[in-house]
Length: 89
Image (cartoon, rainbow, N blue to C red; front, side, top):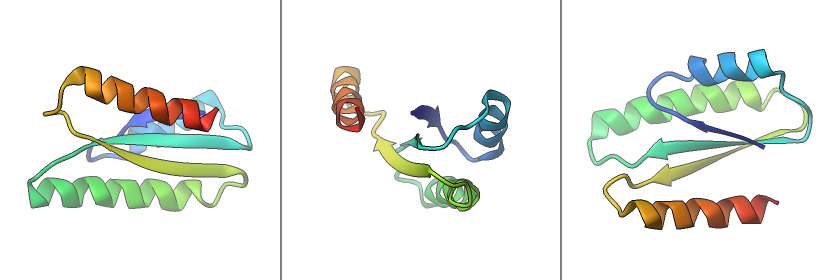
């Protein structure tokens, strides 16, 4: 399992995955911040789609996107992330 945050540039995640060496049967979980600004949403979504298109070409790799509301209480976000992690294992 691999966790990463995504802003506007997918290349940082791709570089890290190449440097670490990605193995088959890996779930890649991408955290994005929830935004109300349309231009920000579009940039994040574009970066995610590029990342997804590259990773889907690799055998055994699955990718999931999770939107985090940074305006929400930090403990609520931690609880949400813990539930997601527990579901994956």
